[in-house]
Image (cartoon, rainbow, N blue to C red):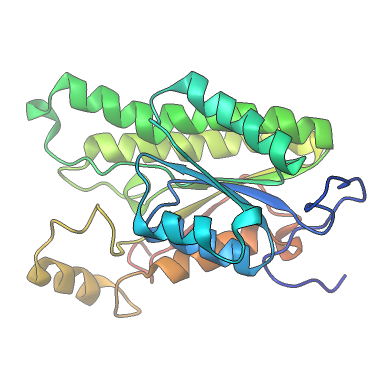
Length: 262
């Protein structure tokens, strides 16, 4: 079956106006960085796109006013509010008639050695990076089960694969996402719902903005391909995993790091 990379197969029952030829993706944390890259990329691939973030950025305003505004849905939300997250999934399903893909990209950077971290900061990191993904995966899976198909991609991290000092809490939350990926793939696979993770290397995000140029260059020197990961590199892996080309891939962690963990 020849199909454009990044598209998932369309069901014949997409009957609501505006969604008859579209698949629907919910990308969390879509206001900037990798999330914004994914929002733009999925819109370019003719998906209807829903996203949520804490604040409205210039990028979100541009999307709301742009030529694809009828196919774009955004809401300001605190990721720690489980009821709000579940309500947003219901809103998206009602507006577009379905949810074909969930990308759990929402996350917060947290660093510091564990013995000196505040319990409050640990709890917030777990809520935002892991609990929110669990809540959204549960809510979206219920929609996908009714459809009889779907796909989820969790944005993990190389920190979940290889230990580094100062990021124990962050690493724990991302490793939790990988555990969710493996188990949920087994739970939902028999119902034609695939679940995978993408584990990016170091790229321009909150996790590296505190690094000096010298520290970034040390990472580059340790990377076989000789550069930092880009948001586009990670997004391309996501598009592949939700595509028909990856139709028999589930429960896997795809590392996109230029070889730094090999």
